[in-house]
Length: 443
Image 1 (cartoon, rainbow, N blue to C red):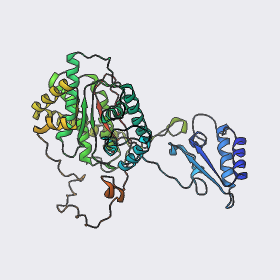
Image 2: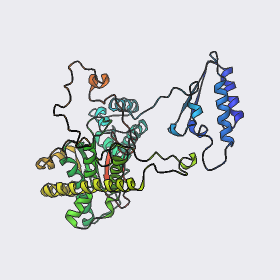
Image 3: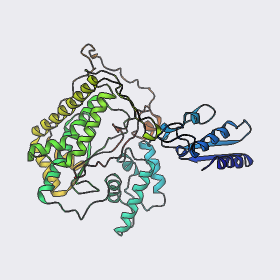
Image 4: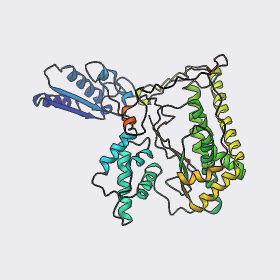
């Protein structure tokens, strides 16, 4: 639909061939917010949108025409499109949960020669945060890898490599690292993994590798055992600590940190700032939301943006963010000092095998000294935690029916955020670019 005339023609054809369904993909291309941006209004795109709104108002009960549209940017749509009588019914298509991923994998595995020992449910558990397109790409990559190695069926090894390719890119077999750089990478990744395993409440470490992949020299994969839709303050503090575990390991062992931790620092800073400004997780600033979501420049929402807090509060925010980062950095360092022998054992295993899976990691971490759980926190000394705790779940309490009937699943609630990807694969990298290979929840 490039002009008002094409819109009129489309709706006229639909009415003449009723009953009919009109589907408009990427409706944000023509349905973007009017009267905003740096350019003048009333351009051809706005005229096209105006004509669409006129046609939608012309529907009657006997029109037998259904209009469906799709977009991944509902935040930039014009409010007139979303009012009652137009697109007043909105269906959010979230990233699939465990059973959803399992069903998608079964669909895309149809027609592909799968080995008998392949467990698609296990593959679904290893791919939290993947979209349907990501899962299709995993199976396609596995099929290509199988063909290149002259195998007849897709096995677990091909699927494992395909998942790694989707997350972090292909292996850089031609990238040669000297022994010192490889040892630095091993200590960096071992630092991430050790701190993650030593702190209570963290998701388990599923994989560590020092094989260059994509733009990374190595990465550590931390995966939840089941889908999660919210994160506690203690879990976020743990995330901060193990994000900085690689940097702490470099400082402890080599006394000279590298650029490999640049992305770790960037992510940790984003999480710490979100804890202060969005989630109200500091006693000093309280449960107050500071700052507003900034729209794109073309929407006119970023021009003349005024901060909704004072300079004194801005300084306090910076101090609280720094305090979170400094505390997490020191905690990671202390964990590594207390487990120096385990850290060295992990590095030796990485240098020998280059890639370790979950079972091998657990074997190395058998002697790991775990940290104590964090103390209770309510946000104020005046709010004392109740010692009774929550009530016991009644035996007949309703749960997620699909999950309880078929296996581990997720809760019905949904808490989403761009900074804390609760269902995302968390991948820490050590590389010159510092880019993270992370499948985000956007959620």
